[in-house]
Image 1 (cartoon, rainbow, N blue to C red):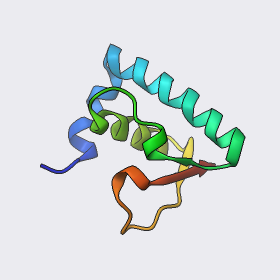
Image 2 (cartoon, helix red, strand yellow):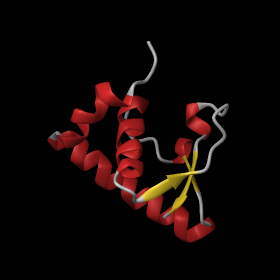
Image 3 (cartoon, rainbow, N blue to C red):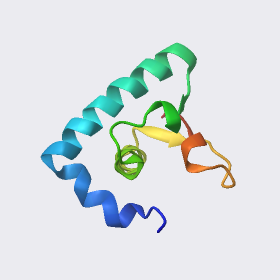
Image 4 (cartoon, rainbow, N blue to C red):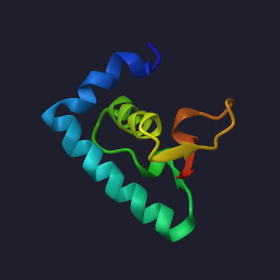
Length: 83
């Protein structure tokens, strides 16, 4: 089974999802301030990486960050910069 944002998006709005989203945003801000970019493997929170992917994809959807990864990159190597 592959990750599909549409299938996981609603989870982001659960109580657990919002908590995870806030944690990811803190990690993201730290990485962006330190180096100007953030990599997915440094943002993964909890035991289910797909939940982290959904939170990050939500941040992209809302325009908080921009992905600069090549499409051939593995999911954990996705790279993001501030908008």
